[in-house]
Length: 329
Ligand code: HEC
Ligand SMILES: [Cu+2]
Image 1 (cartoon, rainbow, N blue to C red):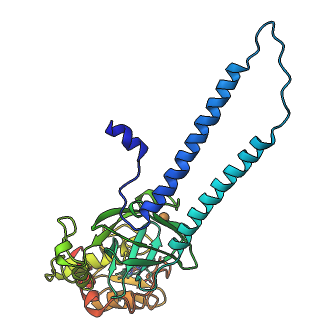
Image 2: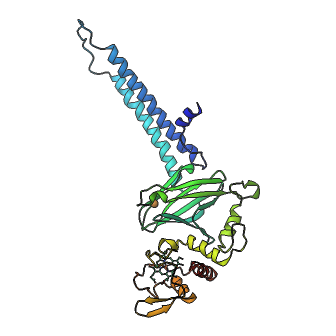
């Protein structure tokens, strides 16, 4: 029996302020359509049988039209459709109007990952937000069309290259929920999945699953040199974390294979060929310069496709990345 009811309610739990209204209008339209479907098909079958041709009995002539019935079947559906429109339209306007006090997070979509940037400068690959507070996402795409979708919030919005798109929602429950890309964006589209972590804002509200308050998480995330409990990490481990957060692996492998950029493995401490500058030793200074001013020295065989991380990578973070690159030689 529960399986039957699950079929009738296949949606994930409702965990945002939008969810109940979205589901209500969905089910209203669904059951309204069901009602008319059953009624129309039912009458059709009934009339087919009632007015079937019987041997030896000539068909009676029937009226060509009936004004009261025709008015009823125009006006009643007319009002129903207007009602549905009004319900959907007000819901849509609400979803398109973020409250002024919303907490803002920048979202960068790229093939095939999500990156979230917070007002404190923290960066993460999962979306971390406070519970019971409106959150506004300011989204941009580095390449193609993506779309951000959190089923438990009933919230979804396209991320269009070349412009900002926005959305907002307010999570109502502490927990971890799925976040999908829901616009086909290439070969690994189906890997473009991450999580939304909804944090409590007070220590009493934390759960086993989400055991940090939002403030605490932010404090730790703003310092990638620390681990999840706020303890300092070994420098190379912190470097690995930074390389993950800044998504260097999109262009750099760690196993010696060539991608868009040279591998992090196998070049450190060796001389590399630089376009127009001959051989240069790849040491700490070379790595630092490559991160801050990637076009200063172009590795032969590669295109100058690396963005500068100046202003994003703090000095002590660069130290950690250097330690990491050395550790994998
Ligand atoms: C969009 C692709 C891309 C991303 C993302 C990227 N790089 Fe690069 N990187 C390149 C390319 C291409 C080169 C080679 C051309 C050049 O020297 O600028 C390069 C060169 C380098 C070099 C010099 C290596 C050598 O052997 O010459 C270092 C060090 C480096 N990148 C570090 C990083 C770090 C650290 C990050 C992340 C914070 C990063 N890169 C992110 C594309 C990228
Ligand atoms: Cu995508």
